[in-house]
Length: 442
Image: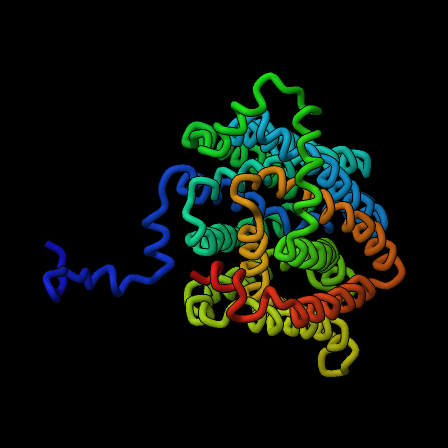
């Protein structure tokens, strides 16, 4: 018998009482949610291995800053296009089948194209296929949360973030490979490994998941209907979408933080290697710093912040985002830091990571909680089309700015963070004690 105390006729399990809430939530995972969380490293590890070097790899193959920005915009355009179809496809094909089909198209195929890339056109083609992942983002999210108690959504998303952060600790392997072989041959190997690992993940997930309860209902309702007939059903949902204050809040924050993260992810490597003279293989170590900080946040700081709602922690996080960018821009101009590219990059990464830990898990939870559980696939589709459509210009625009001066994309980000700060500050729905906050933090 497990050790415990008997009080008023009830046994209190002292072992469970002392368990960390994150560990307790992991042990309680079942069904599709468990399969989604536990297979995530098979995607996250290869993704973490090649991601730090993507922009540098494109530069090495002769792409310009503007062309790198165009690649980003192509991906965003395709994501927006497929987002318009994602809800209908997810309902028509089912969550499980949609996920394996479009995961293969959007990740397995592009990995092969990236591995064999010779010039910009290979990257344009890969970007177009990679944009199809917006369909599987919808269907996979439905698999993750549709048969789950809404009160557990925040803890589930925390574990998705944990899986992503733990995957990053494999990044030194890619650093060693880049240092030994140089960027082009190393990246070709990493992309081939990614193809094998990700494809394995897609197959395992398909075999271990079942169709969700909502998915079975939607399969029955859409049986015999054409895809366009399913799409016509969206007419009645669009007014409902724009009447929802919580969905408008989620949309605005999603637009702003997608644009800033896209710019950071695309141009930090370019700035660090070209402007701060950092060796290419050093780029793999910054995601490790970011992940270590994120894990500290998820396991130790997030539980302490659960009583503060959304607004306070998110405002603090946005301030840290702004501070991280100011460090990156201003420190190289100070004599004491003129040649300290690694130190500057570490300071930026630490500050930006703390900001991420405060902001992004809460933003993801706001989005998940704002959606009608019975219309999650179609509402997600509508939200994503708008979000990505508004972000399409940022890839090309940031590429143009980087071509003029590699500081300018980060100046643009500071402006977007100021807008984000104002949006959070004046949002009544994110105030502590609002209905959204109470439900999210339950």
